[in-house]
Image 1 (spheres, rainbow, N blue to C red):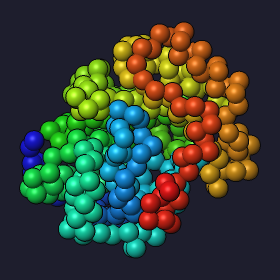
Image 2 (cartoon, rainbow, N blue to C red; image 1 turned 30 degrees about the vertical axis):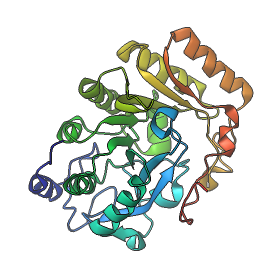
Image 3 (tube, one colour; image 1 turned 180 degrees about the vertical axis):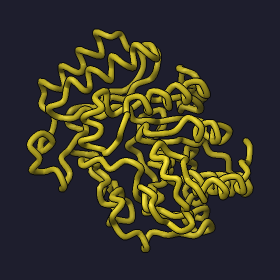
Length: 312
């Protein structure tokens, strides 16, 4: 494990271009940056989560850190309570000591994996947390759980610290990416990011003696209702560019969150027919590795971040 030079990151934060937004903003002044987050630790929840992929959760779960705000603004986000950049965040600022005390308390219960959820806009904060854990002689498996809208140069900076990349690949259709997530050129950006993640960790998951992943890449894709062509395009694109051995996690858990309950296209769950068509496409393309959620999962993955444990 390697400690990254925090001074270098502090210099970067004075003109932040760590994500594809390229805001060039001074994060210490918190002005003109898309994410509306400064250099402090903006974290709403540090909790044990048993709902990740089986090779990550195992029997005991993952210690997940949920950052607030995001470098995407998906109108259907299930974490909308914490991901909206216009929302006030003054109640969710923690000290490094508070964070590491909470994490180590969870790790001391036998949990071996630590996930950073939506970290793309809080890279400096993530690096500080990992470095402090290492100083305290804690070396969990680090999971970088992002929306896929990541920058290659930033991924190279964090290569020594990350063990498992868990990116979304949301869109093959850039029009949808703009419409639903305010994400210009999403397909190109996510493709380049994923190629870098695979360069670092390979296409095959490394599994330890406990049956848990210790290194690798898992690509998630959330199926959106009324947009099967987008999902077909994503699967085709992954197959063409990264092959059939890459580990996929196909998520059928879509549930219309409060902001989109009345949305014309996004205001319902998936149908059985949509679900089956995606399964057929996966078989057609010959993917060999991964996970597919049951259609009923939409009723079991609804976090409530007003609770101490959002998933209880």
